[in-house]
Length: 224
Ligand code: AP5
Image (cartoon, rainbow, N blue to C red; front, side, top):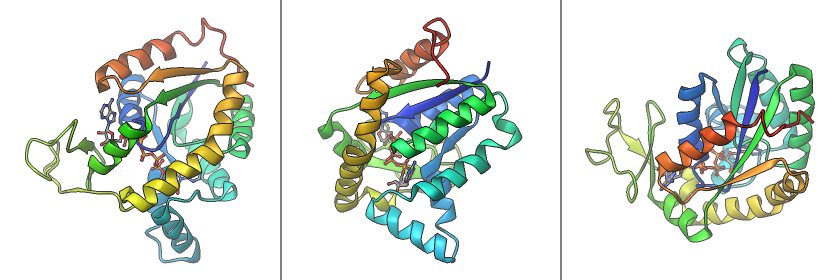
């Protein structure tokens, strides 16, 4: 049975870093809702402008926009055997959509929360740099590139995300507490969420994730 791997965690917890590695390991596509929305925000349309404004200030984009985005993206052929959700769901309404999608597609949902302290999140977001070409993620403190401000993989310039400024970070962390924390309670209460210490080095977090995902069937992870 195909899997939907759901990475839950605060801004800066390492969802993107780990999703990229898991995508390579499992051969599943990484669906980063933040990344897709950043692409949509480039369009000079009312929707593009609305998304740009919300992302820049650190607020969540509406459930309606996210619902359509997810339905369109997950209906692509590369999602047939499974996919990794990086940044979705973030609200209870989004979680309900995921449940019905999993039922329809007859896929197993594996929910993993990467836990990182508030102080570490602030430092990670302040130090993050991303390749403007391939999206590889660096950090000036924990994973600096070999050459300053250049991607090790393709030499393209690195950039800081526009929502990694202190004001937007504050709004994003508040949005996480208000909208996503209830979702975590909901999943934890049903015993379905596996929590992982996200403050370990990247390769240790990755090893732990692989073992949790590989053992999900034997734990009897449910589809609803
Ligand atoms: P999104 O792009 O999803 O951002 P986010 O959730 O705020 O998460 P980040 O991408 O900031 O962090 P991450 O957990 O991926 O960490 P990373 O691996 O980069 O969303 C952006 C915006 O889009 C939202 O604010 C909202 O407006 C909108 N949006 C998206 N999805 C939405 C939804 N479902 N509903 C509504 N709106 C939505 O790592 C961070 C840094 O830490 C990096 O520098 C990395 O190198 C470093 N690092 C990673 N792991 C480690 C480690 N183990 N040790 C040390 N450093 C590490």
